[in-house]
Image (tube, rainbow, N blue to C red; front, side, top):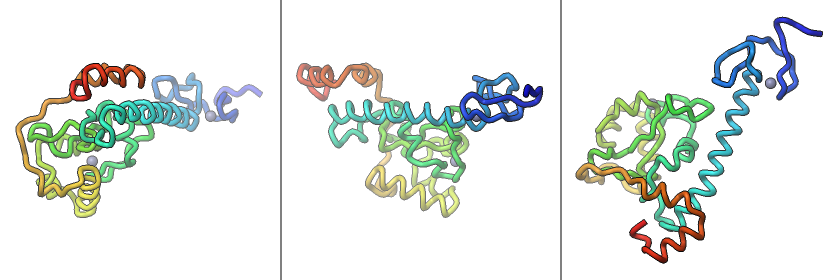
Length: 207
Ligand SMILES: [Zn+2]
Ligand SMILES: [Zn+2]
């Protein structure tokens, strides 16, 4: 039976209203290939693949270079999916993250701001919603905590202490930090043995 208002989704094999179909740009479109449920599941699968790859390959390489100290030195943008996967809501306001790590709705936040000496590191970074990220601005974490609702003060403080291993009261502001850079991006493209050779050649400190 051919219907004008319904069609079959090739992934779940169910016949659904055409209005429930999504095109490759993520918009509702009667000509879209998959139903909305399948579209979301496919998005999640592709995200999990990237996350696995990031965790397995990037983290392994970081550990070759920095050992257990990697969270102090890693610049966070190399592990954005890993940061995203730490929780599924904004630690500052509770807003739920979307199923896919769409960049428009969330940001990497340096808990202690780079402008006040915060590290450009994995351990100093979290994902939060764009709105909190811009409200927080250059506030030190301890000052920002005061502006949060009590339940999120508690959650945020817990995240901070678990990642940085000290209380934000103990943080001493410093001069602006420059972002870690392209050097790391370059060696992350090498394979494990090439990285080990490079360490032997130039020493760990020069990577
Ligand atoms: Zn489907
Ligand atoms: Zn938020």
